[in-house]
Length: 196
Image (tube, rainbow, N blue to C red; front, side, top):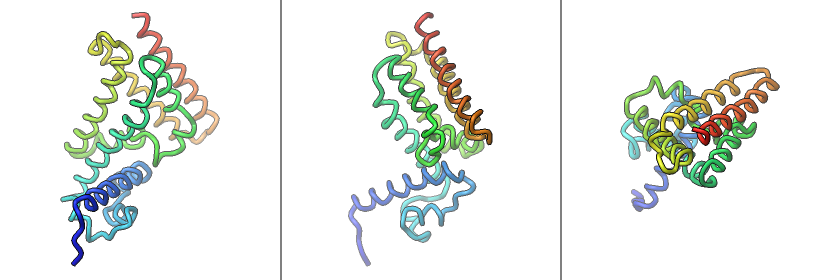
């Protein structure tokens, strides 16, 4: 019997979480069985329970990981203040980001399913969303982030809803125009913040 180091186990667990996050965004939570999720990670179905107690635990963990990664790789890397929010908005409403569901935003890919998920999954999402909201609010009103929190929540809703609608439309031109309008709407919200 082969004994793996703690580091190997940690890396393998993270590989399962990362590949599961990509698959969940592409195929949805119900469309992604444990066997498929484990196959994506290059592992057998039988090894699943060495890492997770249930699919629900993996889903909640993958959602939390996807939200953390979006913040760390996109939002936290953006310039400070309004300029950074504009960078995030333009990235978010890019055609490339819209069309790359697996590597794109977990909000737009999973939001409708998260609303019907277990409490741990919904809490994992809420915790991740609050990090984004608080980051947005701090950029909107650096001296008084609590005053900007609801507008930041509105911005997150505008981003996710617009992207979901753009992904759902079969008319490609209309979907692209919606992204452009989304940029204008979001920037108008950011500019309104500066004039309050």
